[in-house]
Image (cartoon, rainbow, N blue to C red):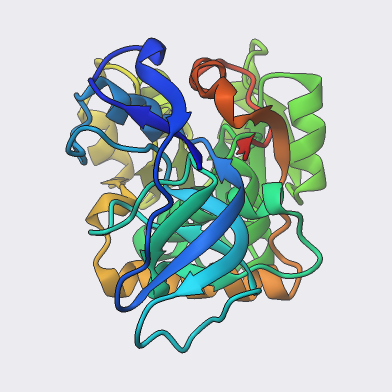
Amino acid sequence: MHAIRVGRFGGEEVLDYTEVPVPEPGPGQVRVRLHAAGVNPADTYIRTGGYAFFTPALPYTPGFDGAGVVDAVGAGVTSTAPGARVFLSSLGTTGFSGAYAEFAVTDAADVQPLPETLSYPQGAAIGVPCATAWRALFQKAALRAGETVLIHGASGGVGVPATQLARDAGATVIGTAGTPEGAELVRAAGAHHVLDHTAAGYRDELADLAPSVVIEMLADVNLADDLEFLATHGRIVVVGSRGTLEFTPRLTMRKEATILGTALWNATPAEHAIALAGVAAKLGNGTLRPVVGTELPLHDAAEAHRRVLAPGARGKLVLIA
């Protein structure tokens, strides 16, 4: 089979499109013939060897999210069977073979049914982004119906499902984007208010709306401003940050604000299972509608890693196997 292999840590040039043996499922495992794999920003950090949460043994195949058809199951697996349409999400589970490939082996617990209404690229957009959105909103911020939530960077891979889930939970949703196309995507996802975070004065509008919860995708740029317009006793959940910042800690005192960091890597197996089960249920009833922004062939993984960090994200970037 064809797969992307990384034999040394470094830039995009270390992503090698090559042939490798088809992996065999062990007890409790499932093999999936993948048709699409999701590309996450974390994939690029891991590739450099400097990611705080996960350093794989070399060589390895990147990718944690994918969608396709069950090809084979190991001993003891009863939750799925060959021929089933599924999506998978596996955060470095022992024995997981990697999603940037034509076939992947993972634990049966990491595999969920893919509704017939969703394409394989949409299925590849589910795992890490949707589970991250679920964890940020419900396991960390404890979002309640009637609250106002700001999704800062709502047009991206995590932002779109976070907007959909928050709207479904009964919150008033504010979503920001940096392009007209991104703004339209956020509006279609269900945001009540859509703001251009590149426009002068957009923070004044946020002050009037006073969100009690902020889901923050770029904390090094926005955190200090978030604390200015956050409602008293509000919560900020940091999903992403790409640098450092300087701000006045007194802002947290004035609002009695809570700043929470989140990373799926820290979720317990039970928390991850709950998030995936919740996501699967919302996929089944149509609440979650994954949005694919860009599709590239598997051999263009290096280009995918360049694009996934570029500003102006719209939906999910996926590789087609």
